[in-house]
Image (cartoon, rainbow, N blue to C red; front, side):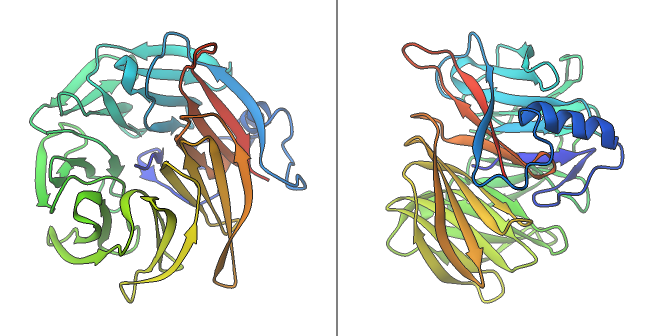
Length: 346
């Protein structure tokens, strides 16, 4: 399951350019605060913990996150608490929350509409809220709604639910089309310049390749001798798809042009989020065993270069290239409150 970064309604996974609407001064100030005042941190030798932001009253599992860069807010789906936590990144504290949700899993912020979308696993369904947290739309007919993504070409919203990938109208949440899959979808990635969507379908043991113009599955890529393929990342320009499996713990690489596996690398256990950093040519695998694996790609070869300790059960995160920051959600422990940890990426 992979979280989504949206800038004024446009999804970006790897661009490090400054959004047009976010002033350079504001961006520098936010980067400075998040990374402990080190704005020009490119000389740092390794990823480091820069900030900790407590999430009081949050218990149990924490799932996906999204960011509102213009409003400088981090949005956290607190599945175990049935709430969405709204973090003010300028103040470094929780500034609000939406309660009475039903196992919130996916979250997506649409800046052009000023709307926050939440996918609920317990009751199914997707809910939309305005910036003042008022409910504005609901799609209640979906079973086990999970990951949310914005189509960068036409502005539709996709959600994985039941045994399908479902396209929604972003304003009304009306169902536009439903693409049947062999089993429940987990993380999926949408091409920006192409017409494909890549979908992890762990209970079927494959990656489904969807043509979003025809609304059909055009190929399935089996994952041999490995199961529980949940997180996924895409390097569209490099024609590589990265999938992390849990049993055994591996990073599996597919060539998206040839449609076959080209590499496999051991990685940390209980992976639930995976991000590709195009600028640095490396991947971040977020694992529940309590580490982040940093895997660098050089001349087409992948190698584990750093294993960064986090906390047990901290298996979800959000990489924000513009901030050079990786946010990690840490669930509450016996003697500690839940929190978001901010790691600077050198």
